[in-house]
Image 1 (cartoon, rainbow, N blue to C red):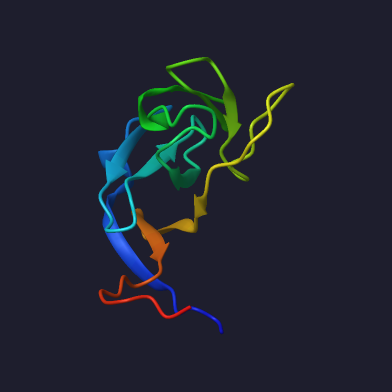
Image 2 (cartoon, rainbow, N blue to C red):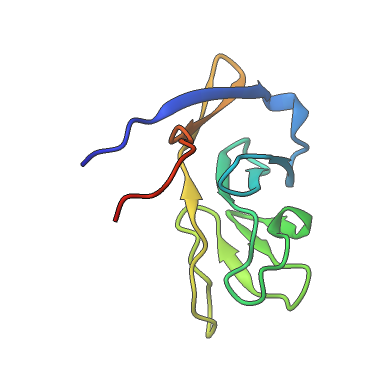
Length: 115
């Protein structure tokens, strides 16, 4: 079954520093939204696949971020660890619309899970 994605405006591009990040709270977990030097936007689950370090506090370089805990480098487009490291964090669809950052979020539903 396909999930419906809701595009959610999280604010102007200017609210995220170049080569920086901001976080967005979501019931499924915190999301890190990154802005590169060339003003591209990426969004990842804010947890390194290694030891769950906060990627939003890492150093953005090119289209990657270095985790502040153990220096793992994560590709912003795929969420994959680079180099000899292995692992992947979740990616969230992100785009710019008229200078505003929007995230493609799956609506959160409360209630029991049906297996």
